[in-house]
Length: 379
Ligand code: CAA
Ligand code: FAD
Image: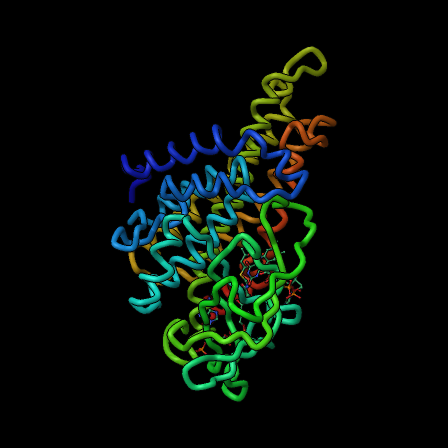
């Protein structure tokens, strides 16, 4: 075992750090306030190769490993978690699943453009009455021979309006329960597909989260990913990798808040000395740094297992469970260290604290991660 990143991994980390500082930091407060999607920044992230990092170069991807991906996710998330969730969905929920399970025709038609960020993708599993209980899909994909007739509503879809390509999970044969579910590629503009209202959120306010409505949308059979009935397994397998990305997002949010807290503690004076000279503050920083390091180790372990082709279901769930709690704890302490200044937008930590919460909810809540982990432990 070694704890040394390769030259390539260090270069990716530095490139992401530089990009976040120069392109994402200016305007991040403004985008949060006005719920503005970082469209221009996402386009540039595509140009730099951040939107299809793990995709094979033959499909226009970066051909990188999962460790490189989590390093980049951490750096982008330190500054702008709204940009990083768009990046995470595109990389791990859309590109990864398409590359692993899509047909050659689907890869040519969709993956090549998704991997460069020319178009953005969305992953549509959740519904008004099927969130954690994801097998209870109400959206139907009726088999009509050479096409599926898609009807239903999806909720909370990240990149809901900014995406062009949507992977939609839907029930074809209710009698077969989760084995009767399919994953279909739906394009924006297909007749009967309407993007619904944008959610007004606590955090990741720059990310556009929408409901989606499908009324008699004709989706060609060629747009089904994998064999008939593979859709739920596709969603779960894809989410395993997605959870590593969201864990890295949580880590970045925590690390960003921690770095700001250290800087502030060294500058601000109270009772005649810097905050960093008070032991109570030093101990907070020590706890924060320890939590961050532990989260990073779990994430890198899960990414390593994935790259090695080993089973990483439990490792990914543990990484997400732990890192999302670390994001909560560390951002709250970072606001505390900033005192009143931490409570206003200018100092960034209040936004990071708001952004942290979602990492305990999406891609499987904290309770669902515990379910996944315990099932793995006990099987
Ligand atoms: N990996 C692979 N397969 C899995 C799996 C996993 N992590 N978890 C479940 N499965 C498989 C099971 O093996 C089973 O398949 P078989 O019958 O072939 O063995 C099938 O899925 C059904 O599993 P269960 O019987 O365990 O079903 P359940 O209903 O009791 O529980 C669940 C399933 C684990 C709770 C699942 O519904 C779940 O993960 N829910 C959370 C949904 C979620 O994460 N949504 C995220 C939406 S995307 C998103 O949020 C994006 C974003 O924000 C940016
Ligand atoms: P519920 O499933 O109703 O859960 C409510 C509470 O009950 C939670 O605390 C949950 O942990 C708990 N609970 C539920 N079942 C159990 C149980 N069996 N045991 C113990 N506790 C339980 N979904 C997508 O498909 N694509 C996206 O791109 C996407 N992006 C999102 C972006 C945002 C900003 C948000 C808020 C959500 C997004 N989601 C997306 C949806 C997200 O994955 C769901 O919100 C999440 O899976 C929880 O589902 P739910 O909201 O229906 O809550």
